[in-house]
Image 1 (cartoon, rainbow, N blue to C red):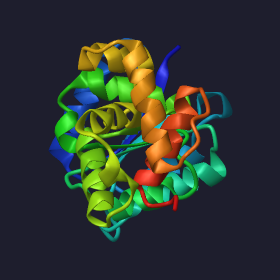
Image 2: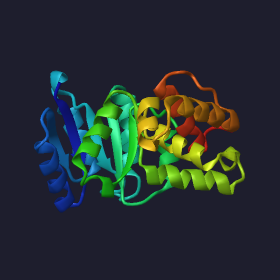
Image 3: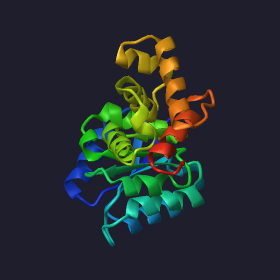
Length: 225
């Protein structure tokens, strides 16, 4: 199944570079490459009913105001195209953007730093994850949120170093098998760490990967008590 992507990036060189990377990937089609928010909105409105894009890959700051256009696009897509994924790109780790992005749910939403764009396999994996309804968070963003929560003396500060590593893997959307492989531990050890994490954070583990990730991301973004 072809993945239809709308790209929004005001930097012409970066926009052309991302288009070039994605055009070389089988089953990925860049249906529009826009320089501002109005261009994205027009591309979405002009899409034929059977050619609606699957995902918007967007910078956060772009014309007309260069403030939070990407976050507002995510909200617009949630309202008008609830099944559409949105992956935000940013040069910076800004917890306020993450909190706003996740305020209405983490399903089909992601936040990556622009330095990740050069790894086309990682980028495409992130796009496919949000299209499938999953969540993607750049590890550096998760790390920043973890530190922020720790400074406020909340549950995160009670996690062990290994539990934090597992938490970051979960926030990236990894399943137990992938976490075990990445950290070189057993899946049973992963399960024990996850149970401990949810116990310390006071959030309910729901068995499936996406609800667990959503709960963790909500907590890290400051949406849970």
